[in-house]
Length: 123
Image (cartoon, rainbow, N blue to C red; front, side):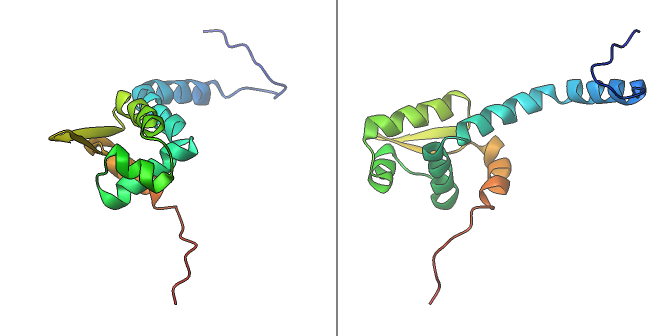
């Protein structure tokens, strides 16, 4: 197998390059899923929604609208985007739909959201 070098190093470590490519191929599905979650969480409103769901377990769109001082349709758009990639899940109770972090993403998001530091002063 012929390797083309793309930088000015004197010699490429072909074994290392092959190993890294194999490692990436082995985790490509996981990286793709996590990348989607991170892209969604990169939006401040959606990150706030995830933070609130981590703290409160489940909330409805009206709760988010009141808390974030936004319209229900605007909140619903954010929720739909996260639901479409299975970051959050839903539960219906009568006419109300409650949202929560999906079980398969709870540990991952808990690790990220644990880095949110409160600026509230404790008296």
